[in-house]
Image (cartoon, rainbow over all chains, first blue to last red; front, side, top):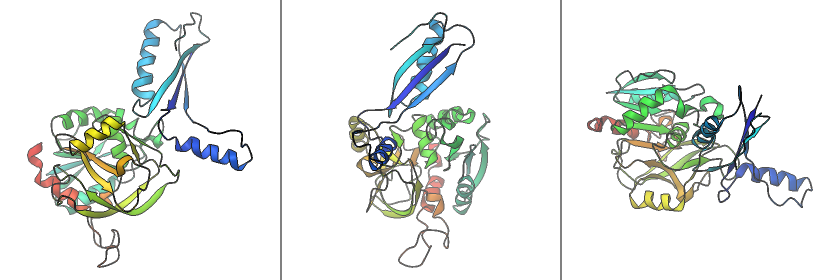
Length: 90
Length: 231
């Protein structure tokens, strides 16, 4: 079954308080060479049948319209995995 | 006047909002997120809470629930819509108001009685205040940091669309101390603090006069009574 992976990250120029909290914890635990952490989301969309251009276009729209709020986040990956017609973007 | 309050799965303050509406002299009407029906109300409140468990992003799934199609149409037609806390998050997710709300910059959930300055009285929900009036109402959120790009912030300030600004402390890292916004027409207002929790003596924030006597939030709901011409 093909899977479309969508990854969303907070915009680089915006504060990422969740990532900052993780980085702070890592520092406290002694992992001082890790200078920063940014925390995003990964969506795995499972698809019945093959992934065609129409579906991929639909997913790209859904990614920027709903999975991400492009005011505060960027869609960084829309990638097909395990498809017989493996298409890939980005 | 009939004011609808929409309950989403995970709404918490819908009952408080309905009580506030009743205390202001209007008739509250319970609306359900899964319907495509506003039951003929004259104004709408999107209440606070954690709709859909804040999954995806705060307000993101609620913004795409069935009734929101009707809410967006009604808002674009001039009907007064107030979004409180999670309701404000829903309004930015529907793009009825610009920008976004992210996790508080300090990472903690915060609950405090918050002083605000009313920056705009040109709205359905703020016309009963005086310009520059300072009010105190409860604030309680984990993701109340208001953000938008610089040009949007400049436009909001230039057009007088900042409705409320935090005073004393900025509790969540909101850019330019923005606590709430209105739209250009003035019928849509969203804010993170909770006016519906400051409407009844004995249950509001402390004031200099007496403990828990603060009722600054009531003016939101009495304002909309005077603004029904907007709808």
